[in-house]
Amino acid sequence: MLEVNNNVEIKSGLEWIKAAFRIFREKPIHFVLLTILNYVLATFLPFLSPIFVAKYAKITLKIEQNKKVLLSDLYSEFFSDINVVKLTILYAILFLAVGLFELMLGKNLTDDVISFAGFSFNFNFYSEIIKLIFMLVMGLCMWFAPLICLFNQEITPFKAMLLSFKGCSSNVLAFLVFFLISTALLVLATIPFFLGWIILFPTMNIVTLFIYRNVFHEISEGTSGK
Image 1 (cartoon, one colour):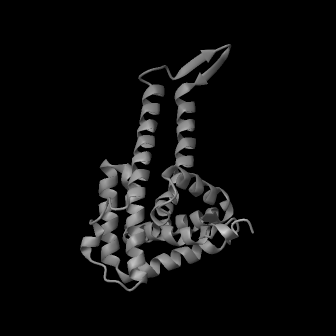
Image 2 (cartoon, helix red, strand yellow):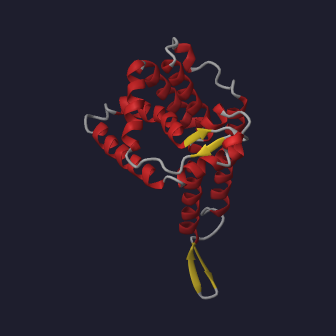
């Protein structure tokens, strides 16, 4: 049974990034190549992100267990974890739903401004606000869902998304500090002609596993009520 830790320390963000960077230093070329593959495929198939989140975690686990990491590990067994694949399909459906939402409420189907009962509404503006809220909620639902599905095969993809959202919403301050640190690092990584991105982007993909370990805990059903 998976339980959410509601008391993640606010200062944890820096420790997560340091732990991820230590892993990156073990196999920098592997992680850089995986990140390139990730972003190239994301250009055409953005809903494959759960597969890559799981892939970063599996390679990290290999490094921690002192197992040999091969270049073939970057692209092999992409669809071997059925629960993650199910999550990816669910994510793809939701991703397409956003596209349909934009199509239905876009400029091609209605005027920008609609008048009703004496009030004027900027329809395109409000549709964008709704879309942004939806994407924010979806981002929180999908952040940890791939790892929840990977390590807890008994948990359905939909429940994994709900647990991910709960984990994020229960530790807002800790994640706010984490994002502030990440933003500062992004600025610093951008200064030397974007060269720092080579290190930062793989590290920020690795970091999800360390956050997951801090936010979620496996407990036995016999102790769940204590």
